[in-house]
Length: 248
Image 1 (cartoon, helix red, strand yellow):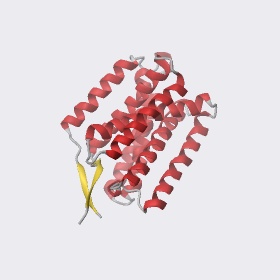
Image 2: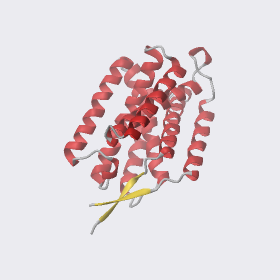
Image 3: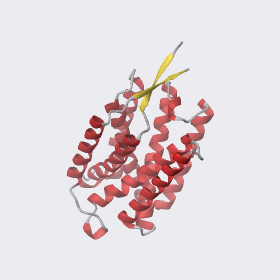
Image 4: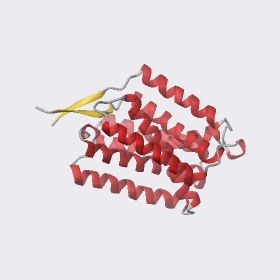
């Protein structure tokens, strides 16, 4: 009997805590490179895309679940998602609404392609390199969409960073209630929550590092990024993520 290791962590409360810290770090680190370092959105995207591709290749090549490698890949996806969404929304001039709609279509397309190719988009079905490739492509689309959504609600909708954080945080609590009621598919709820944690992290990151005149706290982007990285390391040390085992 062949046994394959699922190289993704268990979806627990600790998973979501690390995910939110990672997406917030993605915003501060993305802004640090594209704005503070002056590379701009295009070159920032090129740098983070290269890091993401290297991380994905390493993650797929790994024979077992490595928490540090998995979360490094997530961090790479969220930083490239930040700069890519900003490039599409601002540099290409399609706006936050246009960017969010385009990225929603890409995310739904990635999920549809994955399901058509392998029959399931559930995380416990990720037991082959092909499934992992679909998983990381979907994550990339979700992270980029989340950035555009965060900017859309914070800026165009006028909710600001704090109001948007409350909105997305409330939506995540509603999803948690639906999960406990077991009315909806757990897989659907997982991907909805995965998308929504990204705009929550995006607006929290903006709240930390944007100027006071724009509604932020004007914290140093490098210091905020370092603090968030420390929080992630602490969470992974305190609540180690273990890979599940699946049978084919």
